[in-house]
Each structure stands twice: as C-alpha cells, then as structure tokens.
Length: 288
Image (cartoon, rainbow, N blue to C red; front, side, top):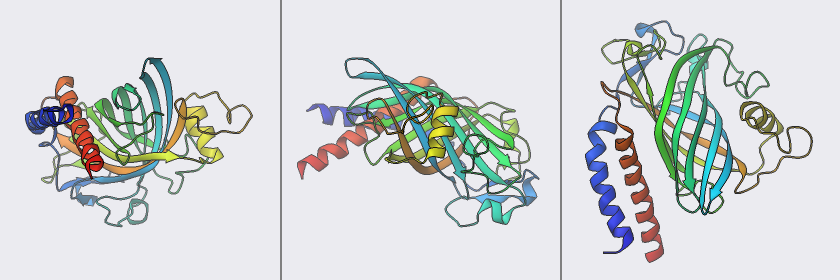
C-alpha cells in the first residue's frame, strides 16, 4: 500500500472517530438577530452566515521546509444561507463584520495549521462602513457581539506558502459562556446561546490577491498586522511569495453547541482527515 493510500485510510478512520465531536454539533434552524433585540426579531438561519473579506499573511521560515505564520483578516457578514436577505437592508442597524487574528505553523508544499488566535464579531449601528478608512478597514467598529478562541484548523499550501486545493481553509474556535452577547444568537426553541459553550466552524476559499488596494495595505497589513515593509512607510507594496502576501476570501461561518470542547488532539485528527482528502484528490488528478 503506497503512502497516499495509507494516509487516506488513516484520514478516513480519523474522520469517523471525530465526526461526533466536530460535525455533529453544527446547528440548523438557529436564529440570529443582527440588531440584538431578541429572538422574536431574528432571522432563522438554515445553517451558516456568509463571510467575505481579505487576509494578510506574514511567514517566518524556521528551517528546512518549515515556517511559522501570522494572519490578520477582516470580513463582512452580509447575509445568511446566501438568501439575499441582506442584514443592513432588512434590519435596523445590524451591519455585521468580523476580525480574525491567528498564528500557526506549516511546511512549504505541505500543510499548515492554526495554533491559536481570536475571532471577533461586531455589530455596527452605522451601515456601510465596511471597506472604509474607519477602524481596520471598517471591520472593528461598533459593539463586539461575539468572541471565539481559535482551537485549530488549517489547509494545504504551495511552495510559496499560499493556500492550494482550491484555497480551502478551515478554522475551528470556541466561545465560553458569556463570550456571545445576549439578544443576538438563539437556538430554534428560543434559548439564548450566550449562556452556553459554543463552537464555531469557518470554512473559506482563500486565494492570492495580486493587487490589494492601498487601503487594505495601510489598515489590514500595516495597522492591524503590524507590518512595516513597503507600502507602510513609503514605497510601493507588492506581495512577496514565501514572506508576505494578501488573500481574498469567502466562505461560511457555522455554529455548534457543545457541552465539552473537543480536545486539540481530536481537532488534529480532523485536520489529518482533511489533508488526506486533499492528497487523495491530487493523486486522482495525476492519474488522469
């Protein structure tokens, strides 16, 4: 049995062993009220909130093919389930945005994984400020309505450290009771989720953004990310593969209810399953 087949078999076993801990808690038919006024004024969410935005990645080679990295990202959350019911238009207030900052490790031409970080969701009573010069690209304005601690996740990267496999990236995070504001998130029966232990599952497609605009460079890279290279204090910014670059991202944010947070080992196994699936897909493409 060759290496890929062995890894795929191990991935399948790992996925089966972690399905109950990772996949089962995903909520369906939950309720989100982007104005924070309670269950009755909310919108039923079939499964996910739509997210789109941009990320800035800074890599630090650590020897051989290995690297560590820092990611800072901003997101707009305009609707749920791609249903075209835009939050700013259908709710008073309710302009929902998010910031993401995380660190991790990886291997060039291999896989990367998140080892820690924070996701913050904001409700901004002033509509239309995302993408502006206010705050970090307008993403961190208003009230923090949820905060999640990153537990794991990751994806595959090429020789420059940029995501491959169609840019598939996953992030798993956790919010302890009290880390979600009351009045925004509910289960289908009307129970406010702010009193519970909640998981978040973010799945995005992330691809290199070749020409980020000057506002993204100034606010997401320089201010939010602490970058001090070209474009921050003079000079013209350009991505530098293997060192730093921008990504354009879009995807889904799902929530899950969990009485106990899955152990990091369980999330690592889930990551192996994802990696095995990606390598299997590569092997099939080569065989054609």
